[in-house]
Length: 158
Image (cartoon, rainbow, N blue to C red):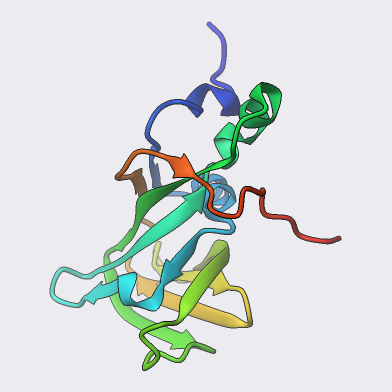
């Protein structure tokens, strides 16, 4: 038996659930540099769910794309935080329907008895925080990958 490798997910649709901080770290790496219009964020208070429809860079396909000398890809994916009791944001103009956000990181700040806060850090000092009863975050690709419009992989200077 051989452990799965990061590259093994290159061709399939991503479907992950994070229930631990280690799980969330993997998910955070996959959604780093995802972009979304502010209009694609939905807080469903009755369902206790925060959903974001994101356009994520396919980090799991980057090495393969480079080896094959083909275009980098993005894919639309649904990022869902469940068991949410409260949502807050900072550094975001929620009244601007043309605002495009970029995800830098997702982290979990543990509280008592498994509860805590999921924090989605955005470029430009913005953040979305969801208080949760437990860590339960899903990421699922919902469309076929498409050529990244910029043609480039995201880059962060050291």
